Length: 267
Length: 339
Ligand SMILES: Cc1cc2nc3c(=O)[nH]c(=O)nc-3n(C[C@H](O)[C@H](O)[C@H](O)COP(=O)(O)OP(=O)(O)OC[C@H]3O[C@@H](n4cnc5c(N)ncnc54)[C@H](O)[C@@H]3O)c2cc1C
Image (tube, rainbow over all chains, first blue to last red; front, side, top):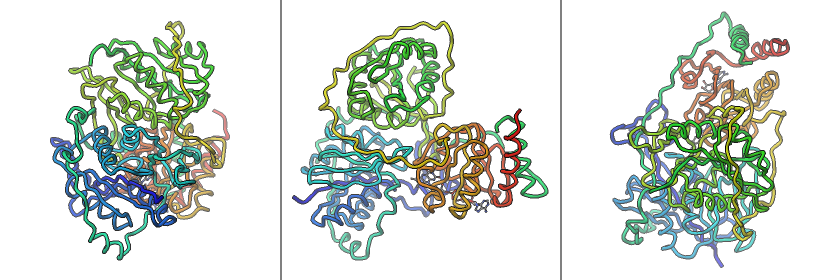
C-alpha cells in the first residue's frame, strides 16, 4: 500500500527578523509585520515536511498532503510545501479561525485530518516560531486518539505499519517505535530542508489548493471554545546596565574580569 | 467551573526519569501561589516503590499534602503511562491549578493531560501570578522566540495548567517542623495504554563531569569562535578551569565548531547558572531564551552594539582571541587559590 503522510504547517512572522525591527501593537496584542519582511513557513514545520519528503524519496508512491490553518496568506505556506514536493495542499481558512488558541488549532486540524480520511503518519514542527507553545502536535494526536512522538530528528517506516523515530533529548538521542497511525513532531536537528526546484515550483503552481471552511469541517461551536486567553503582549525590557570593562589592552580586560568575578564570589 | 480547590504540582523523581531539582523549584512557586490564594499545596509523585519518607521530605520543603502513585508501569518514565496516571489523579483530586516543569516529562504530559481534560495549558512559563481582581492564574511566558512576552489566563476551565521553565525558580528551602499528610492513590494501569516503545538511548559523550543543565557556570561560544579547534582551546578549556560546562549558540553548533547537544537556547538547553559567559555570541532572542535568566551574564564580543550586552552584567568589547587567554590564565590562578 502506498503511504499517506499529512504535514501540518503554520505561517509565522519571519523568526530571523532582527530584534530592532520587532514591533508589537499592544492594544491589538499583535505583532506588527516588519516592513519588507515576508511571513514564512514556521521553520520546524518546514523540517517536518522535509522528513516526510525524505520518506517519499525512498518510496516514491508515497502521497504527502500539506495542511495549513491560517488567513488567506497561509496559501503561501501550502504552496511552499507543494513546491518542496508535496502532492496535495489544503488551506483551512475561515473568519472564525483567526486568533485561535492551541486547543482550537488542534481541534480544527483534527477535523481536517478526519475529513482527509486514511493516513499513516502526521508530521508537525515541535513548536510554532510565534507562540512557541509546543502543544498543537500533541493535542492533535490526543484528539485523534493516536500516539505522539515529539522533538524528533528523523523517522522511517520499518514496515508499512510501524515507524522508528529518533527523539532529541538533552543528553542524547532516544530511539522510539510505534505502530501507525502515529503523529510525529520535529526539531532543527533534522537539518536543512530542501529548496524547491524550478520544476516543482512549476508543478505546484498548477496544483489546485483545496480551501476548507468551518462549515466544511463541521466545526461544533461548543467543542471549539478557547481554553486560554491572551491578556497582554509586550516587548520585555532588560533592567540593569552592562558594565563595560575598560583596560589598556584586551588581555588586561580579561584579567580584570576574572578578578571582578572572584571579588563578587561568582567564580 | 466549580469546587476545584488547591494547587497541585506534578513532581519529578530522578529515579523514574525526572529532572533533578524540578520538584523543589515547583514547590517554591507553588507555595507562593497557595499562600496568595489561601489554598492547599500538594504534590503528585509517580513511580514504583516511592515511600512515605520521600513524601515527608517534600512536606518539609513546603507541601501540605503529597499523593503517591506506585505502579510497576510507572517505574520508568513513559508519556502514555505518566499521562494516564496523572489524568486519573487530576480527576480525583480536582485541583484549581496544576503545575508541571517544562522538562522532558512536562513537555509530553502537560499537553496530553490538558487536552484530555479539555482545559487550558501555558507552556514554559517564566513566572506565575494570581490576578488580583479575578483570582485567576496569570501565566507569563516568552513568545516570538523571546522577542516578546505574553500573559495568558485560562477561560472558564479547570484545572488551570502551566509548565514552568526549569531553573527560573529558586528551590524551596527545607524547614524543620512542617507537618502534612501523605496519601497513596492507585492508578490501576494497564500495559495497553503504552502506544510506543523506547528501544534505545544513544547518549552523547560529555567532555567533563559537569553537564549543562546543572552547571553553576557555563562558558559558551558563538559563530565568532571560528573553528572547532578554537572552540576546544578556548571554550572547553575555560569551562574546565572554572569547573563549569561548555555551551554554544545554534550557529556555533550548526557550523560544527561545537558538538550537537551543547546548543543553548529556545530549541536547545535551558540554563540558568550563577555565571554565563557568552563569547562571540551576538545575543539573538532565541539564544537569550535559553540563558537570559542566568544570575550573572558576561559578554565578550568585538561589536559594541551586539545585543548580548543588553542582558549582560559585565562586558568586554574586543577580539576574544586577545581576551580569553589572559582571562583563563587569571581564572586558573584564582580558582587554584582557596578563599
Ligand atoms: C526557530 C528558531 C530557533 C532558534 N533556536 C536557537 C537556539 O536555541 N539557540 C541559539 O543560539 N540560536 C537559535 N536560533 C538562531 C538565532 O536566531 C541566531 O541565528 C544564533 O543564535 C546566532 O548565533 P551567534 O550569536 O553565535 O552568531 P552570530 O549572530 O553570527 O554572532 C556572532 C557574534 O560573534 C562576534 N564575533 C565574531 N568574531 C569575534 C571575535 N573574534 N571576537 C569577539 N567577537 C566576535 C560578532 O560580533 C557577533 O556578535 C534559532 C533561530 C530560529 C529561527
